[in-house]
View 1 (cartoon, one colour):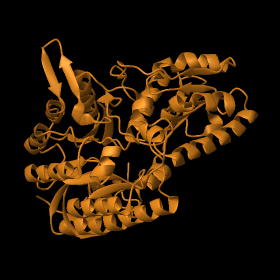
View 2 (view 1 turned 45 degrees about the vertical axis):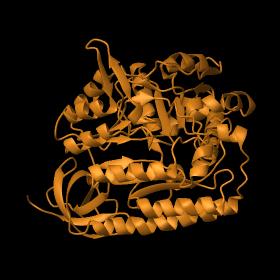
View 3 (view 1 turned 30 degrees about the vertical axis):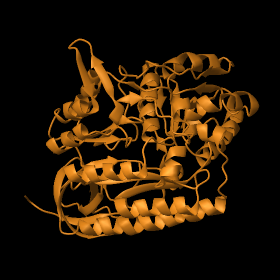
View 4 (view 1 turned 60 degrees about the vertical axis):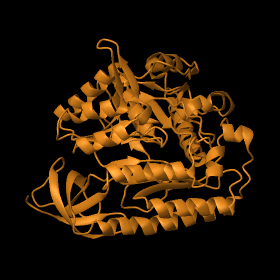
Length: 472
């Protein structure tokens, strides 16, 4: 997740900070495992499922690779840079394996499905390759690999949601947690590899989601983020009660767990978010006023090539509708610079769309062709790298202007802030997030992690609100 106090691009955040280590735990047996996660929030959530499966097999976790009997990397294929970094880490682990022949090294996630042959046979970097839908098979694959047998399972499923597995929270602050509500994606965006690495869309049993959220609240968590590649297309039929649960219904059910449980969600596809969702957000104070609404391009021509199924005008109307129903809603986006055939006029369309929307947060990166995608098969990656980088920088510069203006608009306002921990820069300060997802820093006084605090905003930077706690 991005630190809102930084001005890094989406790509930099993915490569620089999307890394999780398991905390040390009490030994359950002689076996230990170590796991790193790269990429999106879905990968982090998946690693928590993997940790639960391994714990059931008697494994304990370690933060030290030299103590591990099993090393796993949960990978991301969204960017070439991510794959390069994973390969570098696997090369390091191969050297460690030469010193400890019994060590088992495995790759999980999106790269596992896409590069199984390269990892196992050509580059000989790993012993196990496991796709996102095959984590239940890990114990058997590990056993085979321990006996010297290369093991792979990258089969995609139309049913697997891991609904019955209680995730083990990794690197948790004890306040916020991810809850996966669905898997896969049915949107065939031409630039995206996810439908090929995570399979078709399927929704998780609503009752299991509510139970997980209730358990988290009873365990002291005060915020959940409902995760899916496209949460607004969540659709579950409760055959026992003959009721269809939509995403709007699910939001309300989770919010009803407790008014003290904040509810966030990610990600929304512009074509699927409905007025029902917006009205549910308006009706429940604990559903946060923040929507991540990726646009990808401001040019209708490019959007059609991307197979985004909406036009520039349609997207702008959706943003206007959100602000009509939720005037104080924070809105963020994704934007790609230099997609295939993008012209200067297309790029100017993206800049002008950003001017109109004035996003509170933007994840910006230049186009990186991913093998196997529709774009790789249909279009030529014909925008020179230096042009991509220049266009990206122009998007970043504009976003930074808007981010500062967005922060300045909140000066003098009073926000309810959920404290997530100590400030990284000052041990006498705490940080948390306001309802609109902005990071707020204020003096610690007698407050602690997990508290809700009323904070009056007194100053700001381009990425952080600074304030003073008030008694209300």
